[in-house]
Image 1 (cartoon, rainbow, N blue to C red):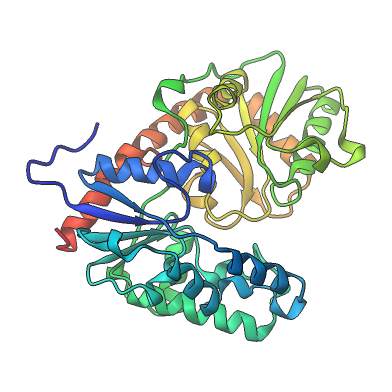
Image 2: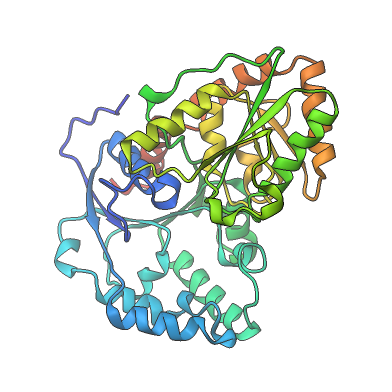
Length: 383
């Protein structure tokens, strides 16, 4: 339920590339949902866009072809170019400014009101985790700019304790300036119906992710193969992976349902995606690198137990024994399959599912996000 505010609404300048009023795909749907969360908190949102111009795109192409310049898109020149595209007239009338990522723009836009940044990581966490092959010179440039703008901001909100701890330890920023608010579920409430927990029969497992290697798609498929070898009748619903990205040895397997990529900006495809949750019993995403994972909030909303790796910021979304399990990074498909069979034998699905819904209602939804956001703003004296 949206928070009722009697006084005239304060205006938050929402600085990002994607239109937060229509784009349901950007940042796994979070750009759109964060805007709703801010409105639920009782604020008016004004979109302040920035664009990549032709000159920007040309430099990007040139830099991407030179290995030494890998990562150049995160340096001062690029954010300065970004800043040139911002219409300064739109800044007038804003009481606060909000950056869902790309807070490096703070350096180049003169903002005389409180600046709030919200993200799922810091550059020290991303380099050599998500991104690799950066030169030492480039790493220093990127981290220096990221730290400078964290320091310049008035409030730093991160989507996991993992990311918040990095702000404190890597940048030496006081904990009083840092807060954690987890991402919510990207699906609409009217699409969410708690699933029936698995008891027996065919086990339908859901995998949702776009990147084959990073999201651990091969591990998920091999896990289902192991389950069948263990005597568990199981199938995998593979969502998000485009057909051309699937290696030949993983194509046309009888225990895999190949759904492909679904666009949440397309109403029919968004409904199909929601329907897949209702058809499955377990979410299996053995990702190798993850800052947060909106998919875990989605699964919790449906009461679907989760199995994944223990990496990055996942510990804020998947709590061992509460809504699923995080296995050590590097766990084999056989170990994942063994854990699933143990969950079946010990009849854990119903309890994990119930606890998942409670965790979703307590932490992983955008109404709660808005309430926590409002409280932070008030405690900081920004309004």
